[in-house]
Amino acid sequence: MADQPTPEASSGNLPSQKTPGRPAAKASPTGGAARESSKKAAAGAARRTAAAAHAVASGRSARGEAAPGKSTPKDAGPGSGFPRGAISRRRLLGTAGATGLALGAAGGAAGYAAAPSEKATPLTSLGTDRAMFHGKHQPGITDALQARGHLAAFDLTAGAGRREAAALLRRWSATAERLMAGEAAPHDDTDIARDAGPSALTITFGFGNSFFSRTGLEKQRPSALDPLPDFSSDRLDKARSNGDLWVQIGANDALVAFNALRAIQKDAGGAARLRWQMNGFNRSPGATAHPMTARNLMGQIDGTRNPKPADTDFDRRIFVPASGDPAWMANGSYAVVRRIRMLLDDWEKLTLQAQEAVIGRRKSDGAPLSGGTETTAMDLEKPGADGNPVVPMNAHARITRPDQNGGAAMLRRPFSFHDGFDADGTPDAGLLFICWQADPLRGFVPVQRKLDRGDALSQFIRHEASGLFAVPGGAAQGEYVGQRLLEG
Image 1 (cartoon, rainbow, N blue to C red):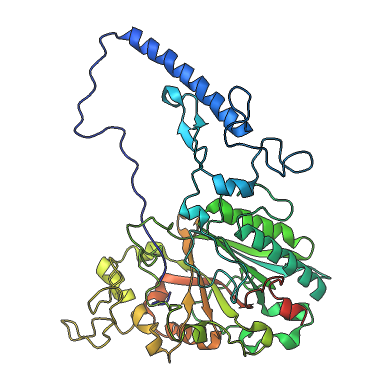
Image 2 (cartoon, rainbow, N blue to C red):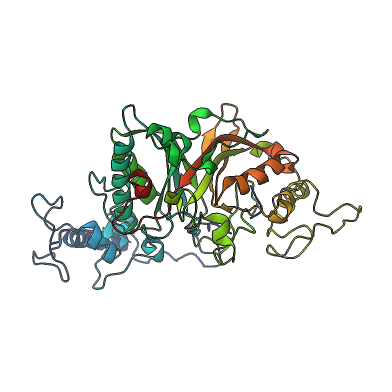
């Protein structure tokens, strides 16, 4: 986990049902009579609220007239998929919150009911955030970390070749474009995300080394897609590594993310079968008091010194140039994917001081042990009280610095994962490490080789799955991802 930004935060506690310092309410002088009267009033209010909720949902007033501001969607009616009075998802995205949830009367006895409102309340910013499908680069590379993620690899089925692959990428691209806009899938939409906005959904597609032999496109396979070398920390499960096709899904809403995964899986049809699939998460946007670099499951700030799009050499390091080779990879990037299990039981036995020595940074704020703040340049020569460098020679942050690796750099955009516990109670948890670079032989490989030779963190992690994928540039309007490869 290299020393390189990303968004962050913490969840607040639910308020106590008791308010400190407030005296208890005195008993009513009318006693049981008052309580009985209150119950009747509450029951009546519950019935009126439920009726209002039904009226709002059906687009009618409680008296049977059309409710103010309500009309039957143009696409409602027989054969439209919407009953009369229903609201389409597209329309809902513009009016979500117009009938916000209000706890029913009688202490919630009536459940949740729609609270009538004269004005439409827009979706929160979390739901309205939208990434563009079409562009110079594919989405999901330079976008901010999302709260939920799914990674999946597919293999083409027996008999499927270039033509079937082209049809599949065309379907996938059409689905991705609609879902990222907050619309329903082109066909067989499950309504899982019906009530939500785009929620910063991104869907990214890539090709594995084996894809090119399966489609007769060996001459178009980039040399940068050659298999990664073996590393000493590898304990790779081949069944959960590599694949013909790779899909990365990210969103700030769990249902939006899952809906996209389900749609992509169904779109595969008979052309491809699922090889492996992994689920990840990050801290939700807005959970911290101010934007922060992400923390991983070891509690460490993870992502300091990540390359930024504003850097003058960012594009050169992360993306294949427009004049690059092969031509179909112009403006694309290479994704290295590693499922890195964290040996959390062993890590958590270390003292705070020992953990910080392993990383080379303070756990509290990510500042280097040489002093300053998170963004302060690390002083590799500063001695400690014992005369040794205050940042240990085998500290993870020291070894991964670009200036210690011939300038090698990569854009890290990971998700954490937790897949339950082993029989002995050991957590199966860690990092879905995803890094982006113009050439993995000048990005991931040299850094990992150096980590392999003496990183203090190595004894607390295990690489259990791996993949390398060529991710072509973004699709122009009217194109699908990979079209220049498959139809070139």
